[in-house]
Image (tube, rainbow, N blue to C red):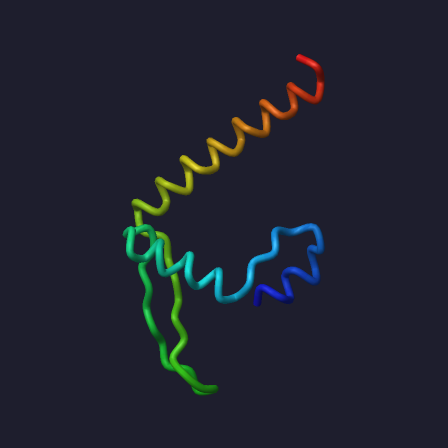
Length: 80
């Protein structure tokens, strides 16, 4: 999953599969995501992640934060 994304977007932030799952586990412990496991005919159970309401709020806050940083960087680039 991650490696194919990295091939398509070479400038993308590169994270290993292991790093992604560590982050998702931390988010689950913090109540930001919930998981469910579904049997797969092709092998082991698959785990699916979904944002909780707290996760959606956190995502909205993070997006607002990064948009503010982007605006500040744009103004610095324009010499304002």
